[in-house]
Image 1 (cartoon, rainbow, N blue to C red):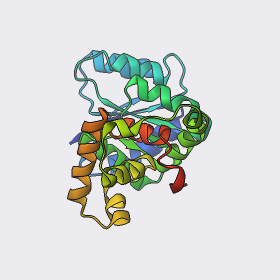
Image 2 (image 1 turned 60 degrees about the horizontal axis):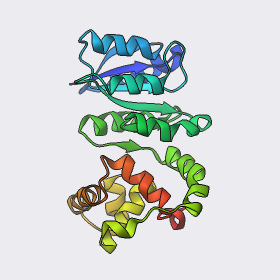
Image 3 (image 1 turned 135 degrees about the horizontal axis):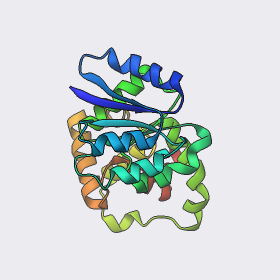
Image 4 (image 1 turned 135 degrees about the vertical axis):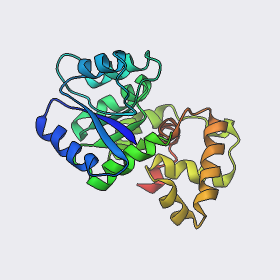
Length: 218
C-alpha cells in the first residue's frame, strides 16, 4: 500500500486529489495538510508516508522549503511537486531541493495516479506540460552555455533515449517512438543515468534540455 500525503492550501485540490487516489486499491491517503510545516511535523513525529504531493505556494512553509526540510529527515517521503505554468520558475529550484516529480494541477486522474506509482517504484516523473515550461525557461541558457553531453560518451541510441526523456516521455512512449521493447528502453535509461551521473530521470531530463537535445522534438 502506497501511503500518500496531499499538501495544498486549497481545500478543493486536497479533496479532489484525495478522492482520486483513495479510490485506488494500492493507495492510501495518510495525511491532509494545508501547509508544508504540517507535513514536516508529521514526518518528524514518525508518521509513515511514502509520497508527498506538495504545492509550491503555501502559507507558513512553502513547498520548496518543505522539500528541503524533508531531505534532512531519514526515511522521509519522496516529494512530487504540484505546479502551474505560473510556477515554472520554481521547477529548477525544486529539483535542487530534492523533489522526485512534477505535475501540473490540471493533470488528469490517470496522470496523477501514474505519477504516484512511478515515484513509489523509485523512478522520477516530469510531466510533459512541466517539461515544456522548463524548456522555455532554459532555452536562453542552452544557447549561451550548452551542456557537454559528448563528455559522457553516450551511444547514438542512448542519446536518442536521453532526448526523449528530456521531452517528458515515459518508457512506454519512448519504446513506441523508437520501436524498442520497454525492457530495452529501461536498460538504456539505466545506462544514461549511470554515464551522466544523473541521480534520477528528472536530472537527466534537465541535462537533455540544457544540451539542446530536445529542440528538434518541440
